[in-house]
View (cartoon, rainbow, N blue to C red):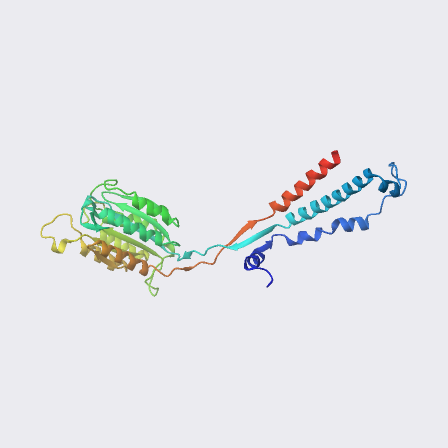
Length: 339
């Protein structure tokens, strides 16, 4: 179809019929007219008027024109009805989304120490939670094609967003998180344990001889030391290793227990590093907003491997248009018959 413009060629290539076999019905009235015998002469009670007399009168001309219009309306009705039955439609390729098969749970510390104002954002000093919300929400939205969930923990652990492909809703859940919702202490072990429970381990890569990489991971962020909950962080990290689930840990805050000099509520970097090692994940140290952004990019690369999924055809039905035309012709015929 080189004679068509570009848009016409694209439209023709997208056109399709759901039931093309229905088009064999188009010549059915002609076959019926040819095969069904005509009514025998004299079998009708109508008065037969010679065609020469009818043609001489103006009324006869109107009757003849009306008959031609009825014929056209009948044929248009039949053709439109058959075309509607054939199911005309446009088949357009949908935009391919990235797909990875990964499931990622974010476990975020929501203890009272997240209120400390020692991070910079847009030239202003903000508390740690504001910086984490900005960078974390952006990270979540970039993970289209993954199933993402969110666990927040302090005195208790709570599922703020279940695993879902709707990354926008998980990002909103993170942006709406507030300190004090689940307490003000730091229950790292319980937070990680709840995240593991939300990841189904049955198809994770476990066992000797299998690759360490798995399709399931937990990203745990904390700015303190474990001082609440019923479980020990290292024990839960060992359980994650048995389940084949990686745990990437992020130690947040300018100071940690190694150089605290008696300062309270500083991050336990050593424990978080050991948790990552036990589970086969990666440990990160974040002291500034720039570090946090770099870590988000690094984890995005570690949990990469996304590829374009096969595009699904998007079908737009066109049969209502010929069906509407058939209905209009039927209404026209009915109105002319009444006249």
